[in-house]
Image 1 (cartoon, rainbow, N blue to C red):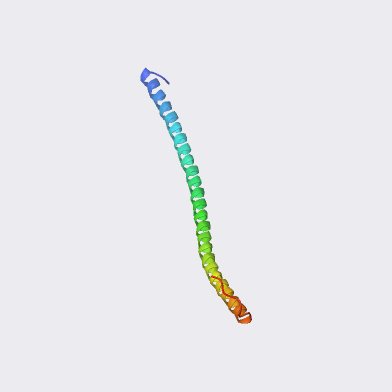
Image 2 (tube, rainbow, N blue to C red):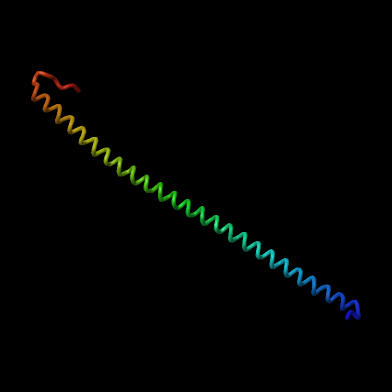
Length: 99
């Protein structure tokens, strides 16, 4: 089987190539697995950021709309107070209007 030292060298080199190939395959597997996990984490973070942006945008719109409603309600309350004061002045003509 092993007639010369060259045969032993060839078998040793073949075994080394097989072992090296196995280690390279395992290394690539772990590298791809790690990249896949990193991709999952980045996707989760991206989804969370998107949801947070949506929530902030909804809150901003609601605040903008509610501030418009508050302005309208303020104007209505102001007109109502003026109306009540005018009615009081008509009812009691002796009182003076304070500014």
